Length: 238
Image (cartoon, rainbow, N blue to C red):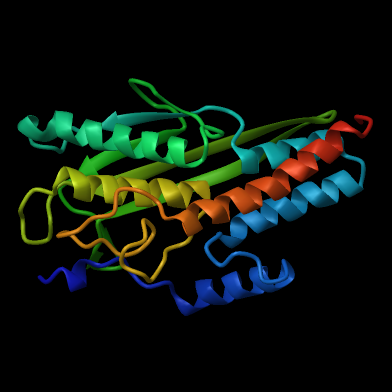
């Protein structure tokens, strides 16, 4: 199997259409941001305009990720002599995103459970094709009634231990894969460009840091959420 066939799956036409509709609603909003984040932003803004400050704050907090994100690492599928390397790749990827976002988003490693589980497997496949990794994530606000709302982030990241040819993944390849999947959890779309953190992985030259445009996309939508938070703090609670 060639490296070209190991590239990330293309975005489907239906998902692309949803992205374009969301961008149109936001006046050509950054194409790197997933539509889900714009939906959360819209909900926060509507709640603010309705005077529901607590709900607006919960949704803006969910965008800002104000609460520390806890994560656990499962290296059980990794060869024993590579487990320290695999865990180090996770920690480096997390630290890279923290630094890129000016430490406004904080992660904390826990021994078990946590908001996010990062697990290694011999292979990872999606729709019948080999991929480097895969992330499933959720951002939810729980409405407990009486004006009480709780934002919560959860997810699971799977990372392959072996290339499709059966050789061990390098630590740099792991960092690209994990950084890419964390980028999804932070709200970024796949990029078609090799050389982007959110782009396809090149096993011979993995990317271990997000690009300026990727970071700027997240900072832009975070700035919008922060504006809602600041406006809400000036309104009476109900």
